[in-house]
Structures are given as C-alpha cells and as structure tokens.
Length: 408
Ligand code: ADP
Ligand code: MG
Image (tube, rainbow, N blue to C red; front, side, top):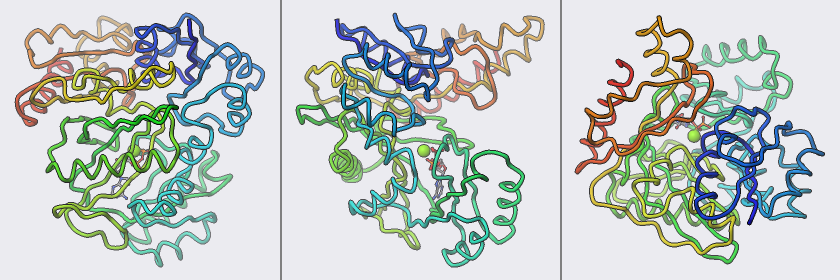
C-alpha cells in the first residue's frame, strides 16, 4: 500500500488524510503536536519538530510521496529531501509562496495582475517609503502571516508611528529582521479564490470559482458558484491556471483574488465587464475556501490532491447539483458562547460542541468538527455547508445555523 506523507497536522491535513485512506493508500502525518486533528486520522504519525532534520529524514524515508498542509516549513530542508522523494508541490513553489515579497516578485515577472507593492527592510526608512508610496496602503510582514496577522492598514503618518512603536516593543522576529511589503489598499468589491490542480503527467483541472467573505480578516463564508458574470469567473479560472503553470505546480495551487469595480490607483489589474481582477496571494495546498468542494463538486480538493500524490488520473470537477452551496467556518467563539451558557458543564465545552440544533436547519448538508482540544477566539474549530436554490438563501441558512449553534 502506498504511504503518503503530510507535513502538518491541522484540519486540512485531516481531511486530506481521509481522502488518501478512501482512495486506498495510507497517510503518515508529520506534526509536533500529537493531539492535532490530522493525527487522529493516520496510522503513523511523526511528532518531531519541523526543524529536526533527522526526524524529517526518517519521515521522508517511510513515504512514497509527500505534501504539506501549511506553509511554515523551512523550504531549505525540503530542497534536500525532494531529491529522494517526490514532494508536491515542490520546495521551490513553497519557497516562493511562503514569502510575500518573493510571491509578489513572481507575479510581477510572470505578468500576472497584482496590487502595486514595495519592499521595506529598515524601520527607520518606513515613513519616507510610505509617504512616497502613498496612503492608504497595507503593510504586511513577508513571512508567517495568516488570517490577517502581521498586517497593518496605514491611513496616515500616525498609523505608521503606531506600527513602529508596536514593532519596537516586540521581541519576536518582526523586530529582529524587519522585512515588510507595502501594498496599495484596494476598494475591494469581492474576494474570490480559484483552486487549480496539476499532476505529474501534465493533466490540469480547476474548480469552480468561490466567493469568499471575511470577518476580522478571517474567512467567514464561502459561496459557490461565486455571484459573478460567467465571463469574469472564466477569466479568474484562466489566470489561476496560468499561475499554476508558470509556477510549475504539481499538486494544488489556490489563488486568492481581489475584485474591484473601479480601476486601482497604482496597480495593474485585468478588466472584464467592469470588474478588475488582481491576485492577492497563493496557497500551494488545500485551502479553507475549498472545504466547500466536498459537497459542491463531483471531486473535492482533497481527493484531487490525494489522486495526484497517488498517481491516479484526475477528472474535471463539476457542480454536484444545481443551486448554491455555502461553507461557514465555526470558530472557537461559537464554542465559547455555548460554554458561557452552560457554565455548569465546566471546561468540557471547550472541546465539544452541541450540534443538535441541526435538525431544525434542513439546508445544512454537512458539519465537520476538527476535534481540537481547546477552543480559542478566532481559532478554526470546524465548518459546515448549506445548500439552497439561491446564493442568498444558502448564505442566510448558514448565518441562521451558526447563530443557533452559538445560542445552543
Ligand atoms: P492572510 O495571509 O492573512 O490571508 P491576506 O493578504 O490574504 O493575508 O489578507 C487578509 C485579508 O485582508 C484579505 O483577505 C483582505 O480582506 C484584506 N486585505 C489584504 N490586503 C488588502 C489590500 N491591499 N487592500 C484591501 N484589503 C486587503
Ligand atoms: Mg489570504
């Protein structure tokens, strides 16, 4: 039986491991925290650190092919290991996409649309750089950011000073090695994502386009198909597939897009039917927005990646039925809210969720909890999917279900 390795043990790894098993191989998880979601799904787990070369070598040795479900693995080590075993996507793809500056430089060189940007490597030069670049802009750390962490929205010199004070007071890497990008703040009308999949034999597919709604910089809801004209959705797919090809991705490439209705001030966008498209960032792995594919499409993002890793043929994913699907994240906040209402039940509630209200919500077609041991504000603990005739109904049903969960 083939042994497929996954670096990282979060929910994306957990759902990928399920697909690997269902398609007839074994998943091996490399994850320091033995209680992480994916570890529950695997026969073998390696609980070493991501810096432990000897332990990583033993893991690669056991696997027939390897992938990763998060981006903070040192690509330097992976360049060595991929000489021995197929790593999909490659260490080079990971290196480019795990650093915002390299990622944006790639977009520029490949002629792909993106927000105008500039690299700043010294705090004392920031104010002058920003004044020259122009307000409003968004400052982002080049490495390690997720769910809006490591980002500052800058409207004026006071915001710049506030950011610099925050950095001066921090003892982490932001201060030790200051390396940030400035990018034009866009007047975003919609965010969308496109997941492309490419296999070693050169076949390539793309999923329908997802419309993504964020709250506090964290993905809140994903609707599929996105409420866009077909011409715009087709263009997004074309650009997403071009990016995957230019990056030579084998595996999955999620491309996050910003869409505006007015031409951006400094950035080069692609215009289709009065929509302006720009690439925000890539994730060379399954994506939170792609959870929705498990119900909405004839092939899920997890099955697609599992097939690529197992060298099985890919088929084009199409909508599994008419109408719209909506995926909603369940954050720790929902658990904490239930916990507050049942203070007598003690801490148990921090890792269990009462989902019995689902019976009263027939539009809900799936609920998946990740089994994380502790709920925290903003932490992704689970998700669910609704299905309805219209996008608005699917979204309303998702909002109503999550409210009912919080009030249970
Ligand atoms: P992360 O790695 O945290 O996902 P992103 O670059 O995707 O970082 O930013 C998170 C969210 O912040 C985006 O989905 C978008 O809602 C908002 N955002 C990021 N960059 C910009 C920008 N240039 N203009 C306006 N909003 C932005
Ligand atoms: Mg993002």
